[in-house]
Image (cartoon, rainbow, N blue to C red; front, side):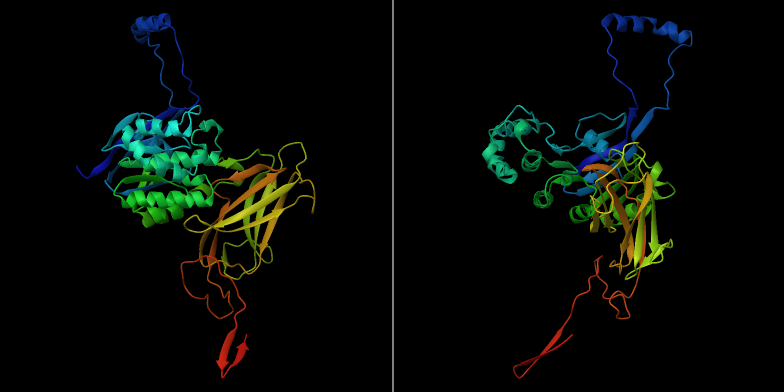
Length: 432
């Protein structure tokens, strides 16, 4: 027990969809209490409907030892953020219990616990006090926090005037530097520029090497793979699997993620954002003759087809469309983008199809997820978070050498103009 940092037993959290808090007067409360026995005998007590009940978590159990770095993964709505909010004592579970052995620090949302009217300096001391730090401890870490956040010039400015990047940097710096025994981080790498994300990941690695416990939620699987020694997979509020990180990630990408796409048309999907002026309704992979195929080969000319509709009555113009190809760790391998602003047409038809031809498919064998995004007049029209589909790539003779090339931890192959140069008595002989 002394090695435990977190122990969760049969934890469940229930929400009632569409429920609102009802405020009653003292007189109404007394009347309801006094008349309840009579209503019960008359059989008129309200029956609780289960139609609008959502179990965000259901019977979750796991243990985390001190010094472990554990990733929590799962698709949107799996219950990851709800779990971290319960562990951070922001919300209470419906049933079950969670035992925390040590002081916990949380970064669940940008600037959680910040008061907008207080300055950056004041919020550092406020958050430190909330975490149970002594004033002397906060003073000792103060300069490190400010330097990490890169906000020294604005440290005595109210944080309501900070940019979102400054807000993010200071929030993470406070949570990471005030040295709680347990650090809970939810999607911190989803915001900020690339330099800040790298800085955050490095800091969390330092925290982990210092022997502190970290619970880390992130959608990019590369960050989970690099940081965590163990992972827990949630789906629909339940624990699907827990174990070594690479095994859990493989199961998630091969079994859970495809279920978002299989057997459901794009038009019926609800995991989407955008104003809906253009909606993606279909996805197909075609060969060079525009015939549907199940799998592709490296070096094969291929076509990705995206069907769409414009459900509104107003014409839609200035359209941009892009698709990205993601590898087994959900890292973007490459992006293909096209703007139709005033080139081929100004307005989309009511329904149609975009076709993107990829000559000499430069992908190594494997399974890849395709994401697509459409904007119209500068606003996002449609983006499906789970992606629009998958492509399976088989070995192909990309380099014209009779083989698929060297095996390696890569996704994209590139042809180069190779030359061989020989030096013989001061003369260079080049052969291409």
